[in-house]
Structure formats: structure tokens, C-alpha cells
Image (cartoon, rainbow, N blue to C red; front, top):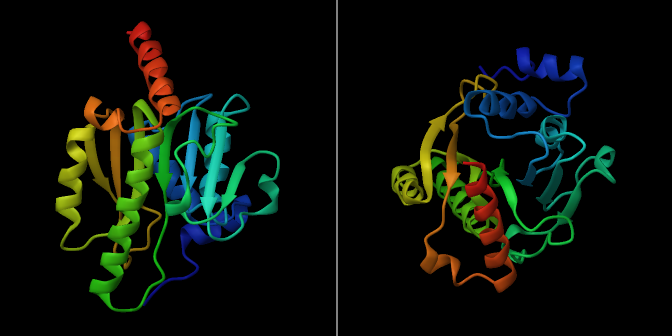
Length: 221
């Protein structure tokens, strides 16, 4: 039987978080070092905003948080988050140029409207992941990180293999805060790089921003 009010639900209520998913991102970050102080992070499928809560706490006052969703996020984020109420497929690569040239991390907790038919729901979830990564490719800085939620289906391993050349390391993890009966898992890409051939197809401003980020990263080595 599904436990709607389990430990993480109660903990979120007690600690004042918007949803139990706060603890999912917290664990993923703890295990993979996704974010640092002053990072710039893009949250796809952000509503109501529990991941934004964690992101803002982690990147601090010097960081930048941007978000996209078809539904509005909680009013508490007004003035703290640059938000676009739209479909991710309609976003231009320079949509957030007013606040940042690129992102240190792109995370997606997007989920499809479920039909109750397992194969259909898995296919819809896979499509959202592919859409999230297609956008992340255009805005992630060299060395950046990517996270997306997916309902694991027959094409999952193929998608995972498609990501491998783009990242230093690929991981698949299911946080403790995910319900036991849930099919969801999280795909994590650490250390992003984009082949020069693909990068040249991006808008000139985006390409130049990437080059600057790459030079800055190389100076730190």
C-alpha cells in the first residue's frame, strides 16, 4: 500500500519545505557534489519549488537560480529566482542572458502527465529527459553537472549511453526520499564537455561564453 504520509512527507511539513523532493536533491548533492557556493543553477520543472529551496540555500547570496515550469512557482521565490512560465521546448539558448551567460548545473525534476499505462508513461518521461538534456547542452558551462528524473523504461540504457561521451562520469541513483513503489530514478552527469563541432552550431554569444568559462576553468588547474 502506498504510504502518502511517510517519514519524508512529515519531515518536510515539520521543517517547512514545500515538498519531500527537497530531500531527494539534498541527497543527490551530498553524494555527487553537484553544487557549490556562488553557482548558477537552472531548475527545469521547478513547481512548486522544493528544489529551488535547496538550491538557494546551497549557492548562497552570490549564486543565481533560474527556473522553468508550465505552472507558477511558490510566491516566496519572487525576487530571488528568474522564472519563465513556459514550455522548455520554447526556450531560446540565451533566455536567461540577463542574469548569466551559462549555468554550472542544470537539473530537471520534470514528470509527465501519467496515463496509468506503464509503457506510455515511461516513453513520455524519456522524452522529457531528452528535451531537458537538449537544452542543457546549449547552456551548461564546461565541467558543469546535469541531473534528470526518469521513469526507467526499455530505452533508458540507450539514452544513458548517449550521454556518456558528454560527461566525465555518468551515474544512476534513487534517493531514499523516493517512494519505494515509485519507478523514478535519477540520471546524473558530472563534468560536462561539448564536442567542438556541436558547439559551433550554437549562437555566437553562447559559444564565446563557453570559451571564457573554459579559459577560467583551465587557469584554476
